[in-house]
Structure formats: structure tokens, C-alpha cells
Image 1: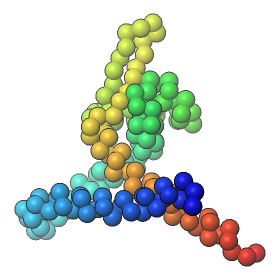
Image 2 (image 1 turned 30 degrees about the vertical axis):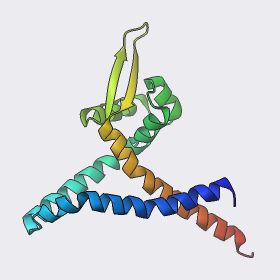
Image 3 (image 1 turned 120 degrees about the vertical axis):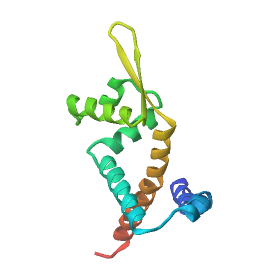
Length: 152
């Protein structure tokens, strides 16, 4: 078995543990939630609003790149996402900043440089996305390996 297989085996084992830990942490909160129709409606709206934001073009990629690079400058982000036009990139970074997912630090040099860093909230969002990325990636890898084994 190679290290890539070991990684995916570790991920397969980790996801159920993460689910159990989250459920355990939320168990007390869930027990206190009033599950009447009005509350469910508010929760569904909150879920829809959250997912609508995360589905905006380039949001997930930005969170991923900022986490990957830790404290990238604007130019670093743009270099990693060259297909994003400047106006859109600036707009999405402002949205992330307004929702307190990233901190923006202006460095007074010539020229002025802007650096970004995920906040604790932004890191939490990234940590929620990572298992989805791993799960999907592994499913695609397994499908690809399965397709390669099929006789022509």
C-alpha cells in the first residue's frame, strides 16, 4: 500500500470520528432547540443563505488558497487564481472580510501591499469544507481506479 492509499484510509477513518465529535459537542444544544415549524423555517433559511454565499463563484477557492498560503498578499492570491478577474477577486475578498472570515492587513510600503489571513471563523469554514473535499476526491479516485480495472 502506498502513502496515498494510507492517506485515504486515514480520511475514511477520520470522517466518522469527526461526525461523532460534532454530534457529541452539539448534543446539549440540539436538546434545547425548539423544533417547531417556525424554528425549522428559520433554520432552513439560514442554511440556504449560508450555502448560497459559499456557492458564490470563487469563495471556496479563496478560502482554500488563503489557508494554503497562510498569510498571502493580494498578488499571491491572484497568481494562484489567474482566471479570476481583478474586480471579482476584490469583491469576493471584501465579502469574506465583511463576514469576518478573513482579516485584511494593509502594509504601508511603496507600493502599498495588502495581506490576507483567515480568521478563526474562516478557518472553521475551511475545516468544514475539507472533509467534503476529501470525500469527493476519494470517491473520484476510487471511480477512476475502478474504471481503469475494467476490461475494454
